[in-house]
Length: 93
Image (cartoon, rainbow, N blue to C red; front, top):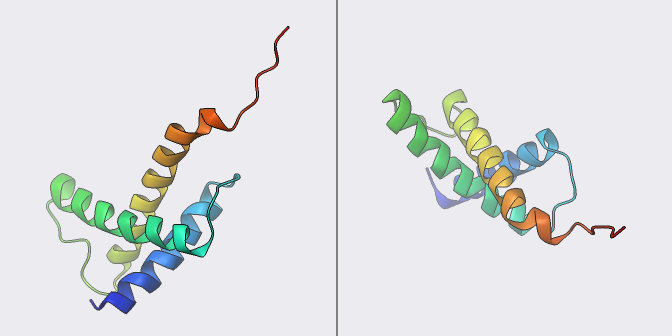
């Protein structure tokens, strides 16, 4: 796939991941796109390691989108775990 296809998949997969996991996240379109692209790579790698399949086959293959979205959700969850505690205010009794 071309770099433009990866960017488009990244943007859409990242947006879907954010929609599936609503909450306040910093960053705009660039962060969403980067999460989606990295998520696609992570999802493709996990698909190969766990299931022994090439899940990143082409732009119009369902497996590409499932892998990208699943990887994006994983990365978004990890991102929130790492940064989540810094944004919450604790009340002292």
